[in-house]
Length: 328
Image (cartoon, rainbow, N blue to C red):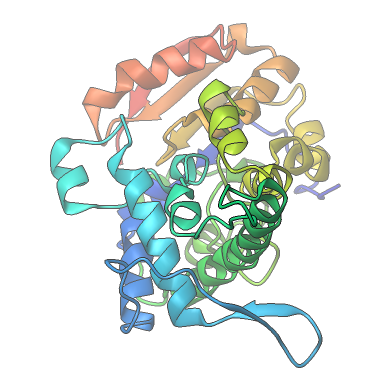
């Protein structure tokens, strides 16, 4: 349990998302991660389908070439980004990454299996057993490649430089001793620029284990896709869940945060938080454990067009108080 300044009543809860870091000039958009992969692995060519070959490393584990892995990951993620219903046609054409977490739940590995040569038996028919083994081997190789995604993401997060960033005066004026900050970012912007101690990094922070992923559930189309790749179903399902954000675990590990806000919140400010579906469980939990009827939730008005949607998301999560806006 965190210790707060002696006897000071908690009055405000701040919910901080990626837009907060962006407002401080930090290059933390998913598109920047996309660009980082290109600049860090310039030989990675996603235009060529190349399934990375897997080998045994010196410690006895499985690994693959980073350039090949990055090329493959950029390819399948970019394809998922282009299929996103949330993006503008311009973003799709330019293949700007902006829905990365959601895209991780919609990765399509069909190309990998389509490239395999179907094994035939002595009569020239498809050998179902050999085909299943081949598919399983391919899926096991995919698992090794996909597992490296989190390493590349953590590498990128570690490069974000906040040394030149400056505090925003109007935001600074809102902060009082005892306020609590629920931070969805991996950076230490709040701690280093504002000297805040009461920060809960619900998804971890750089240098620690990072929680990142989609919030998708398996659906009929997904099940059909898995069934098409006989022998690979189990491994592909494991891959799907390895990329899924474990919100329950994150909330369990931050039970001290939820205890800290019980009965002591007068108002809530959210800044740079997009109210994405994958993070909705956190908002629901907050609305369950505090009496929201007497609370005003202030949404940052950086993009006024999104206010109605954010308001609807709050109502869906069970918020019963007043919704207003604030500027910084």
